[in-house]
Length: 171
Image (cartoon, rainbow, N blue to C red):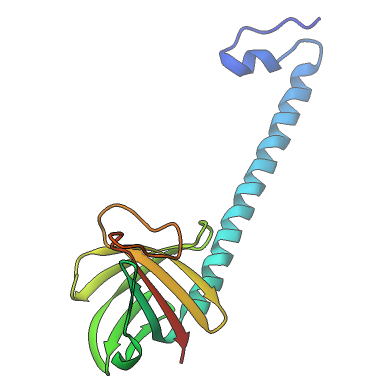
């Protein structure tokens, strides 16, 4: 009959006499293979989106607008340029003079996509800026906040937020 075998938890509920054990083991094996395949697909998709976004992010970008704490900042006259390298490193120059550099970690599968900017030289060296990013052709936006424990969830700043929204154009 359908007598349950004494076993811990869910295992005891799926194992039956009368040939059901083999069927259950086979179904379990197929399920595990399917789960492994889905996991591999998810990892491959994550790697693909990381490669895609890292390639799109790589290059020389001129700052066209900066909004900080809800206020538009004058940025066009300052010649702020960021060079992003394929390995995740970056440098910032103002009027041709390097003022900072660091590395980045991206999570393109987050909503919105997330980026951590690790400052290794210049003002803020040793800190991590938590941000979000958006890529659209030759324009990108980056909204970030210092390393005080929270990441912006939208591309906007408000007075008192201490968030910074930067729009770049590819050179």
